[in-house]
Length: 365
Image (cartoon, rainbow, N blue to C red):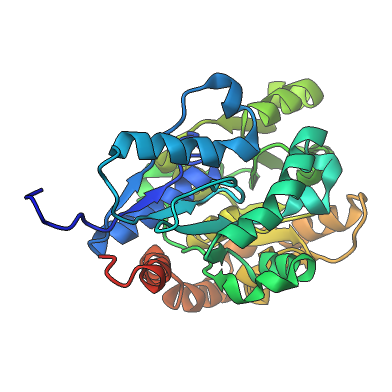
């Protein structure tokens, strides 16, 4: 850069969550960044603090990463920049330069809705950090109306900062039919989720046992989910009725979606809804628990919601059997075509996110 020339206005993303291979936030970030690149916007990944002790304390991560970024930029660099945390609470909570603009993306506030679903330590950190993040951030992006209302209800003073930007439906890419070999003898059920108690992995096992051998369940999950399923459903794995995938590529995930006849979303709480969007983009009907943000993404013609809030598997068994073969029905394919023709893309998400950046720094490229 020549002497006297102004530094370019840049947006830095806090690395928390983005660098975790196979995570929903990593996929969200990759798709959004591609869209921003198309718009010519400069988005860089911020510096990660390497201190192992501090990396385990969630409320410190944003602050430590921000300070690490300032050190990397050097003392002479005084130009303002946008700092965007994409993982709910990862902003500098104690201090930041007044000229820098803070943005945060909130996917959900499930730790407050279901404290037993997370560790006591994380619950206390989240409860303490969230109102502070909402005060520090000049713009707050929320993924779903469900999450927006949850935030509004608890922190009504933050309402004017909240900007609804749902994610896109075209993030996995195309898979040719030649790349997909279906199990023609069995109905293929699919669940895509990390393991949490409220995600209801035990229901998936009970459901598969009740349905019998005409059904295959494929689960894409994290290491905790893998361990749980091996421990609780080892017999189903041995019989070939259950298949588990962990840390797979986006292409492999796209192929799994294409093979599925029905996507299962039994979680009690859901604000992010990335699997719902991916399933619809792949042409898979959905069976889901009502009362979450999934209802915002799934038209009645493309899925079925279970309204009863209980641990009984009977309504799930009945719905799965009713929806057998639904994916190949002419009416479903027609309604799917109409829905996808007007679907929201990641380019839309990028454009709206860029508008947020420009509202804070008008000269942002």
